[in-house]
Structures are given as C-alpha cells and as structure tokens.
Picture 1 (cartoon, rainbow, N blue to C red):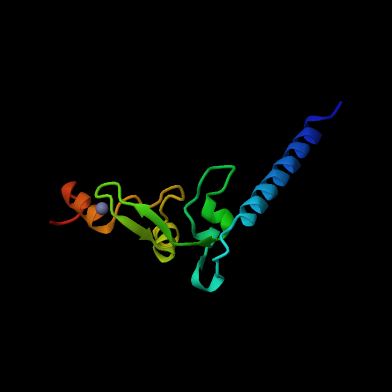
Picture 2: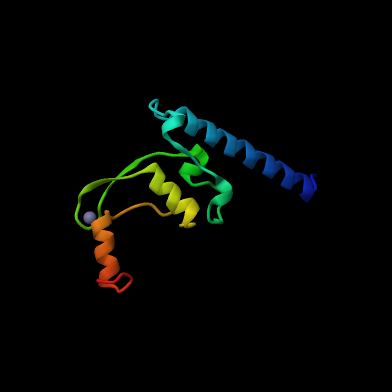
Length: 119
Ligand SMILES: [Zn+2]
C-alpha cells in the first residue's frame, strides 16, 4: 500500500500534467492574428492575488488582447482595449475575474447616480 505522502506526490504530478495539457490546448486554439508587438504581455506579479487552482484566461494566455463587449445598460458595442485591461488588472489591481460590462458614459452615469463622482 502506498503512503499518504506518495499519494499526495502522485496527485500533485497529475495536477501539473493536467495544467500543462490545458495550457497547451489553449495555445493551440489561439487566433492566428496574434502579433506580440501589438499586444501587451501580462505581468503576473502585478496582479491582485486570487485564490484558485485555475488561472484566468488572460493569465494562461500570457497577454492582453482587445475584447469586444456589449454595454449592459445602453447596448452599444464597445471594445475593452488591451491597454485598458492592463491598467485595470495591473495598475489598480482590479479583480482578475472582472471584465468590462458598461461603456464609459454609462459608468460615469452610474458613479454620479450613487454619489461616487461629482455631478
Ligand atoms: Zn452604455
């Protein structure tokens, strides 16, 4: 019979193998349009800490890329740019699981409505 320590080592090795496999699968399905010079690299050391066995998608991928979204309030199509993401995640340490859901005018309106910004 195996000891608890052996079993834990096996589990850890299996977990690392799975993580590597997932990372590889992610890299395999990347868009071909990726060009390192026009994208921003993720610097994991600057991110807010997160408690999870997995990684957020952009961390696993290794760079920020422009992300289209539809504003929740007005329905306008917007782009959350790579630079804006880097600012949110690295400069102001925003949650790594948060992403843009409202356009700039709608965000300002909300801040004014609940008193976080002067009218
Ligand atoms: Zn909006």
